[in-house]
Length: 219
Image 1: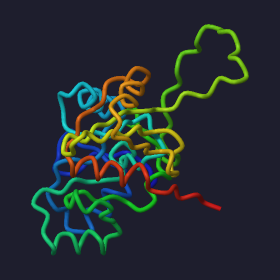
Image 2: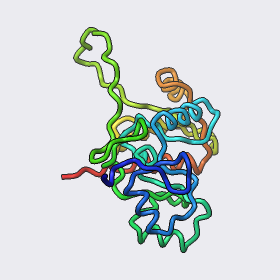
Image 3: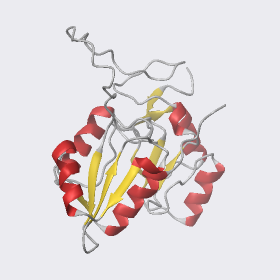
Image 4: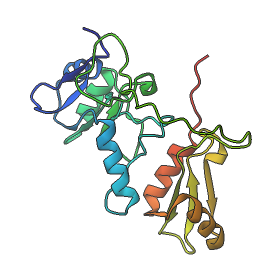
């Protein structure tokens, strides 16, 4: 039995989270929650719907440099958050990292926890992804070939002309969120990375803050 275990959430059938998150939540008085842990597959489904213009904004679970606190089973979405409940959760050890998501709290340093692919998980170690089948041998890439990284093109529909952002390369640096209002450049980006995902102004700004946040590197 360890803090990294994935366990059922008392009083919420079908909901799971890490033991550390559940015990801290209980210390805060077990406020009502709408979401705890979210498996990789479910987050990928939500992200794919978002990319197709059929769902709410959702983070890419393959962009593992991002917090992805729900996928790491270290976060809660609180129903009916109040200043009193928020204070209790902070005293219990949670942080509220996003001003635009006042209901969302998570354990500090969430990237120390692995993204969860299956339930249940074993205790004592961070959850590791299931091994992928060994692919058939392929020719070695040319020396100039770059490793693929998750890249998404976003469009701010609240500006005239539209503002576009190419996101996902070189996390934690200005190159991670390349912005333009040039429609011709945006078309070139879309030809390579897929059609732009439309966002309203506040969501575009919130995404920019996430993508441009510097990485925290442990010494």
